View 1 (cartoon, rainbow, N blue to C red):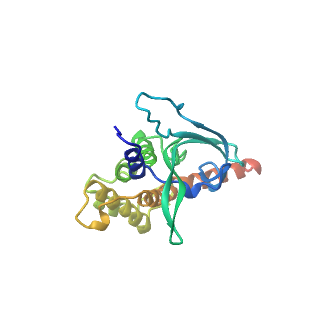
View 2: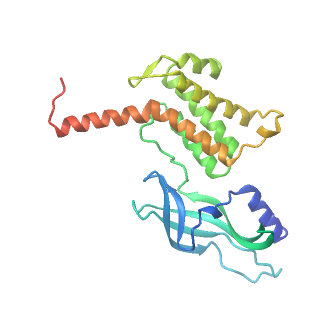
View 3: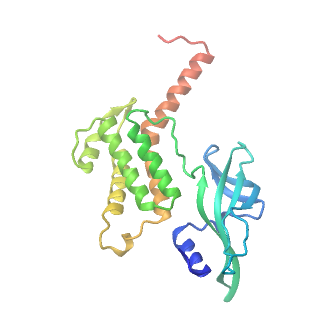
Length: 257
C-alpha cells in the first residue's frame, strides 16, 4: 500500500521497465512486432485511463495507469500496453528540467514470442517452460525468466535428445555429435547451451560477485536471443528447409522417389 504519491512513483521506477525511449510522439511508438519480426513505428489508435478521477474523502487523486492500443501499420496486428506516466526531474546541459517518462506495467499479449510453432509438441513441458520464461520477462521477473530458459534447455537435452540424466554440464557435452532432425549437434550448440545453463544457475544461486547480484532486463533479453539461436538450429531451420522442399516439389509436380 502507498501512503504518498512519491511512494507510488518510487515503486513504479523500481519495479517496471522505463519505455520512454520507445515513444516517438503522441501518435507513434517504436515497438517490436513479433509477426513481422522487426522494430517499427506502431500507430497509437486509442488512449485511455483505467479509472476515472474521483474526489475522495482524503482529497488525494493519484495518477491512474493508462492503456494504449498499438497497431502495426504493415501486418495490421495490434497489442495493448498498460503504462504509468509522470514527470521527472533530469539534468540536461547542466540544467534541471522536467521530462515526461513512461513505465510499462504489462503488455497484452506478451512482448516475447510466446509460441514457436516449430517446437515439438511432445513433451509439452518444453513449450510450458519457454512460455513461462517469456511471461516472466514481461512481468519484469528476470531471474525467473533465466531459470525457466534453463529448465527448457534441460527438457531438450533429456526428453528430446535422450541424453542420460546427469548434471546439465555433463549432459550438454554428451550432445556434441548427436543428430536430431537431420542436424548434427556441434560444439557451438553446446557452448551456447552452457551459457543458458550458467545464467540460470546465477539467477537461482547468486554468488558474492557484486557484478552478478542483479539480473537485468538486458541480461534477460540477451539470454532469450541465445536460447532462440539454440532453438533455431535444432527445430526452426530444419522445419523451414523441409517445408521449402515440400512446397517446391508440389509446385514443380515432382514426385518423391
